[in-house]
Image 1: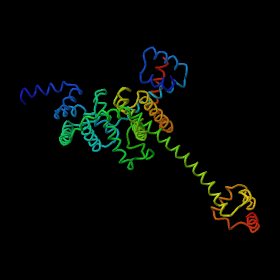
Image 2 (image 1 turned 180 degrees about the horizontal axis):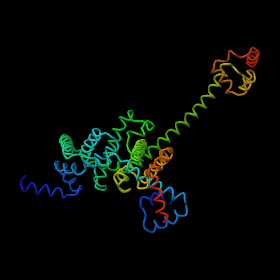
Image 3 (image 1 turned 135 degrees about the vertical axis):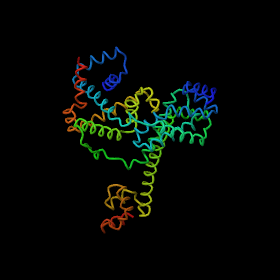
Image 4 (image 1 turned 60 degrees about the horizontal axis):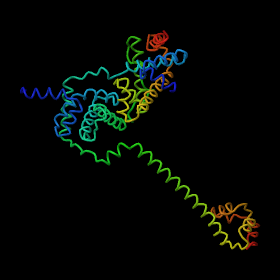
Length: 180
Length: 214
């Protein structure tokens, strides 16, 4: 049992007499624990005293009026039929249902993400191949890269996508034409 | 009232909540009136602790009883009727609070001194106001656990039933609420010092420490 659980059980008297005596022995060894317990006890007392509604004075007339209002509402209300077996099952397994739904959603999300990434990668390569075909590169992709001073296919593709092709220097364009 | 009517009223009054519920379920709508009589005051006080307004609290009580009646067939006797009713009232109060959250007072706006009274009264008023405001801004579950434990004097088993959570979770919520309040009040050193000067609760703490030590 952690110290937090121990002091709350001690303060709230949620332990047997033997456990209580053992806990008291333990707390006596720590000044910090003693202070915490007395402070929490003091706080509880102050919270109790701060209760604005503890001494609520409501007259019998007020209660009768409220009672009549409630009973008028009840007269109009309809009792719902008893829940079906499936509804009962769903209610008693609600926590499991929430947990399994969350897990299922997480699985769907992860699968979708992986599929999207794979599709992106595939389409990326395809796009480059298409660009290379358009440029008419006959000696493979590496020539096109050398000619345009791009280190990777991705860089070339990005420039193409960004419509920066027309920003290539004359030398780069001549180099590219030379590879065709 | 006729003698036979008086007798049946007395008989009804001796029935437990569960027995009355069974009668209502069998179609005796009027018996529900006794359940209302038994629990309306407690429910009103509980609702007031959450919504802090008599009119709104009365609405909460009325709505809660109507909801309880409508859903009575889904009430299973594993939990006490009172716990089930409190659960409905707390959820109803929570919804009311949600709809009027915008108009809530900021903790920093709470005036510390309100009138010329004895200093110790002033300190207690100030500390109480501060505590109430900090209770109001606690996370709802912690606030519920604290309210049910300290003000309604319920066991953690009952609190767990009302909050629909395990026993340990109810206790943990209560513990977190106390620790949060303690931390918040630590930030008001001047109030603590003032309280000690006039014999406020921090002096009671010292006395208690001495008791535990002995």
